[in-house]
Image 1 (tube, helix red, strand yellow):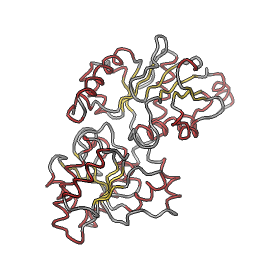
Image 2 (cartoon, one colour):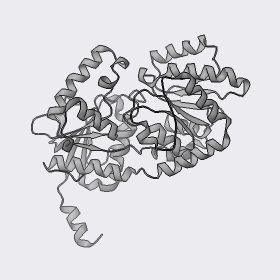
Image 3 (cartoon, rainbow, N blue to C red):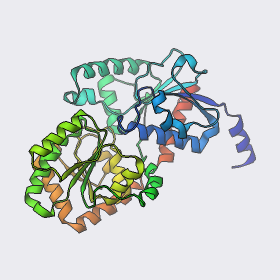
Image 4 (tube, helix red, strand yellow):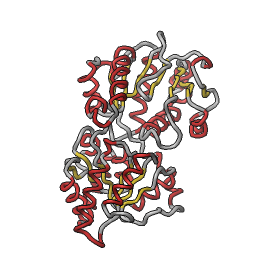
Length: 377
């Protein structure tokens, strides 16, 4: 960078970004939103840290996890009344009680589950989400969508101007690289190989169909069957699924590990034989990229955004067809050359994703919103 370019960088106005994390919970209850937000903001800090000051609105319970994001000049606030002037508000949960007239807002939209698969949510939640989506469709300055699929659904359901929407994919798998080094000293709680499904136990994640598919597979594979390992935030639905496993005579073969910290999570990835991801609805699908990074072949749902993410690096199945899913499990477990082929495809596919590029897109739109300009597309 030439001296005049460095000088220009120094005189650019500093942008104060409020980040509304008031809905974010400790540990893994929010699924992929936390690694998404933390990875993007850390990359923006790395690439253009002097340009941004962040004000994080978050609970005291989240403060320990937030600590790595707090640099000199950044701060955590419990509410808007204690906050300094904001140039732009970033709303990673889409909605925000902190939205104010005169403060431009960039809203993150991860999915339109309440419109595309309303049966996966209580009716009260469907109605609540529909109400606030209608509000932010009018009030937000721009929308960060995590796939072209999600962007299309936002336009279809809420008639949002396409010029207000930008797409960033989620190559946040590199957050596990440091953890992966630590993981070499941590043994996986389950020896490999096994089928791995890292997902919270929400209805649209389709665990019931996977358990039925695994029962069919296990009945034919017998003693050679790979185990099936679940991770995810422990909740009441996880307990219900454990009961289903017991009734299916699969105790000891289907293993629930709960939420894992990154080093443990990376250790499990190192041991896994394949990712199985039969979700009924996804805005993106971060575990597909994690599997590619750890050299795991993938069996995935052919629904929603997953083919956009996986490209030719996945064996796709109808997620509602337990027998087709069981056949894919049997195929991937029994054919080493097939596994090698899909691992190679995964490495090639992964090279198409770039966190610096996607984070730069977000930073451009935060600045554009703050300065009331149009961001480059």
